[in-house]
Length: 344
Image 1 (tube, rainbow, N blue to C red):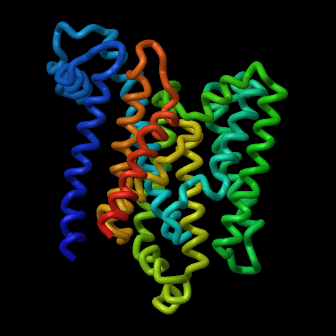
Image 2: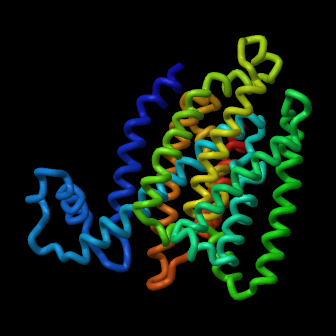
Image 3: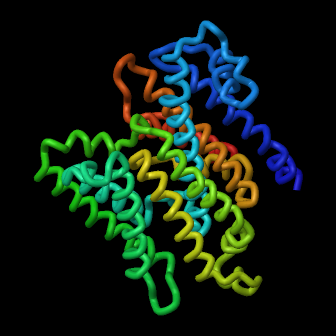
């Protein structure tokens, strides 16, 4: 009980840390803008607070903060929150701490859609959101196919779902590789998207993604009680009043919509949905009422931090953020596992 109360009390503090990381990230980049000037630029956008804008601030600095960095950082936080929350939920329903949001084919489906959009030049028809839209639609299509392949009458056994996801992922990855071989000119563009990036972030994406991702996170947190009961087995959960099949379907649908939205924005960024919820579970325990919101905040912090490193580590060259998440996440994950083993 003490751990639960302590963790709940820390959630507002974690939100403040996330906001602080976002403010620091706003001030970091090729163009140096100190954090106090950054805060004044942001506050000056509030009606009636225009006088806070310093007279010596250049128009270019305002543009960099409001039109380039701010939408990027908001999207990075949203994507991190989405992947971490869905990862924690999927680890719960699969009862597997190594499960992540991409385990049932969402990632490979979205990647194939993005590759199709790139090689067919759909941007001429659908505009700048062509790649994101195709990734979103094919991500949803992949989970629809996986679900129907795994269904056994009115039930969807977890092992069937995992096997169908692995099979479909392999097939779609092969299709995407074939597209890359046939369209070698676009290969570098496809590879860069696959490694994950927020370099093309804009306010249109923020307006579309924010309600979907936040609604998905809230929806998953709503099922925290059911996830807690399903840890003890589906039969036990059913005896305690949980409709396990309906719960699995709803969580899968919400998780798929949330991850497909995230992937359509950033590309396929690995490790966040695995390392963050697993790490938070080691720190706060398996109670999803605490685990899900804390994972969401920690995922946002982790993604903002790694994206800031990705765009500022090398002057003039942006590193795909997926590389940074793997480089940062893998050693830390190994350290936590080793530490837990030593404690036990």
